[in-house]
Amino acid sequence: MKTIDLRSDTVSHPTPAMREAMAKAAVGDDVYHDDPTVNQLEADAAALLGKEAAVFVSSGTQGNLCALLAHCGRGDSILVGDTSHIFRYEQGGMAQLGGILPHTVPVQADGTLGLDDLQAAINPDDEHMPVTRLVAIENTHNAAGGIPLSAEYTAQVADFARRNRLRFHIDGARIFNAAAAFDVEAKSLAKDADSLTFCLSKGLCAPVGSVLVGDAAFIRRARRARKVLGGSMRQAGILAAAGLIALHEMRLRLRDDHDNAQLLAEGLSEIPGLKIRSQSTNFVFFSLRAAADVTPQELAKALREDHQILISPYGGDQGQFRLRTHYWIDRAAIDKVVKAVGALLS
Image (cartoon, rainbow, N blue to C red; front, side):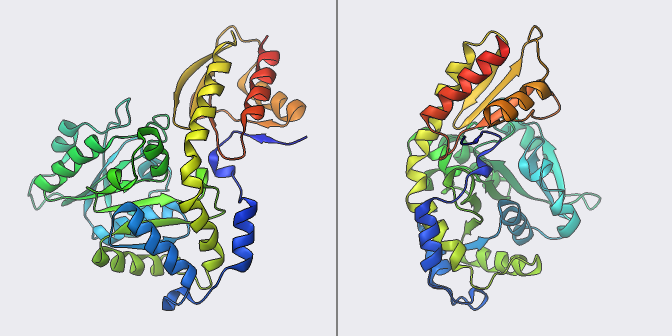
């Protein structure tokens, strides 16, 4: 029986075409800029996002940290959402390794940061306080339910940054999901930012890797940061080959994942024992109702052992689950999940 894994889109694995491309990839030493496949990936990523240059990194976390180290000096402060991935799920790398202080502002229900909140969070020009150097947003916003942020909102943040002489970074791990949701080119969501990082894995199915984009001078600084973080790779074309397929083919089908997530939410909403909390892009959040005759742990265990369906409680509320669709979740899998959850909660 095939396992249906909805715990995250990070569990997606390479397609057969990716595996073939990896096996045949032309390689060189990327530290010497001699790997043709990495060079192609970086050039294509920069063009697709409308930037001058790009650098291939091992993960979104490394890409974000390279960006912060390239933008900020020790003792600088950044404005970031209080539930953002950079702040909450990257082990405080900016402080541990960069001496950068996060100044958090509330993330709104729609995944945005309020412009008034951002303005109020900027430190005055006072020798007692760290210099506010950068503002960072997340698109799509993970903790807010996979909500995409529009080009109009991004332009507002960019205008705020320019008026206050700040740099502007986007954690765009799922920027192509946002582009699919708005039916726009990803460069329209990136054009006003100084830098953006996006993941080649997750919904794009590559086995590993992210790309950080920006202007040429910024990317030179980011490469230095990648080196000190131990992220400079050698014959990385084997990985970049899968990334090229992710970039040129897999991003074009992300709408399928969104449609499947909507179908999943609609099916689950008919089950009396649970409540749909939200559905956006490829995210579905639901919680068990008080009358449900099963605990979250019991539900997850029964789905795993009896149906080979993997889900897990999410966040501090152990009654809540986060499901994410991806390439390896098709309509038949959606039907099976709805049927199995319905049977367990009936």
